[in-house]
Length: 193
Image 1 (cartoon, helix red, strand yellow):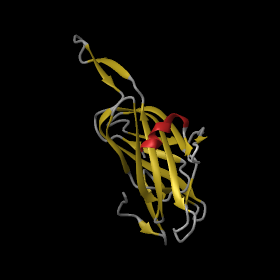
Image 2 (image 1 turned 90 degrees about the horizontal axis):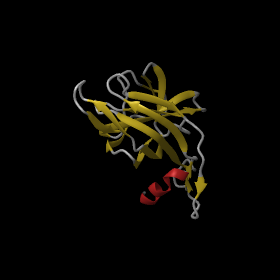
Image 3 (image 1 turned 135 degrees about the vertical axis):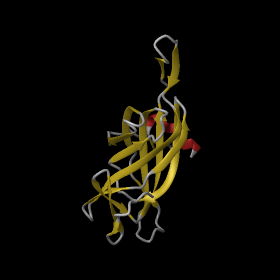
């Protein structure tokens, strides 16, 4: 979890300032499944004015990080998680899924993506699902939100455009025969989890 030295404890919440926005990092935990899609795109650019064009694709060899944002009605604060590593080396045309345990930001309303390397990455769609215990004792069955879909469809280019904030978009969803809710373009990913 990333926090700066100015973070202060607010009785169950950690308040910190990230990117000039006040953000609260809750101490209660939730599990998230995060799915990311890198479209299959290939581009050609000239290496110099006289040379031939060189192909490159939408993937990246570097790490890509994500931060989740929500809103806590009880405390009336914008909530956020720390930065999670999505994956090192995202290939073009592939879908990836990670499961992380972290601060419960509430229903995810926004994501921030970060590509810290000079290897550009074209981010497609990101899906996030949050799982929380229904009971306060943590022994009850897990409750989950609907998939939150974030259509990024932008290049994350370091250093000038290495970060991108995306607000939640509408999410179509289906329910599998076993009762699991799944996003239509990511059915195969859940079989692997």
